[in-house]
Length: 176
Image (tube, rainbow, N blue to C red):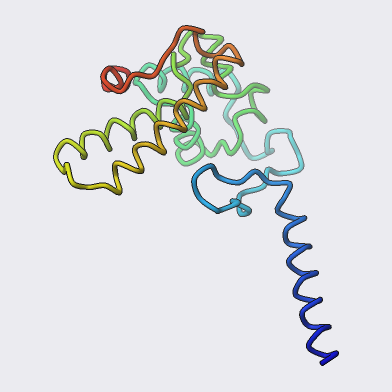
């Protein structure tokens, strides 16, 4: 009896420890996941010694790729894979989006909001072809609620105009 009780306490303590460890991370909005795994940035913030590309060259590459229509995260992936630049900020001392803003090439919509709108447009297009798909109708509601929440944040942060409003009828023109 006492051995059983100590096991249950041990399990409860382990759950408590796990809960305390996870409480610092923000959970996802419409799923139970906490997203604990992820990459860690290197401790050293300076550029690696083996990297021979200069800050001006990186700025030119970023501007050229932005003019082609690439998003900041796509530019970062391309710089990492093709040019060996792990962290743009360690070489240029400013992030990709700040470089784009300085050159007047920043996107009008924040990238995460743009991706959500794009997803909502594709789900809505799917719904037109498959009217009886109730699961995708439910998912569309969840996606649009995330869009509204993110838009509210960006209006508060003054990254979106105060009169900006998401409208599903005109959303396809925003992502086209």
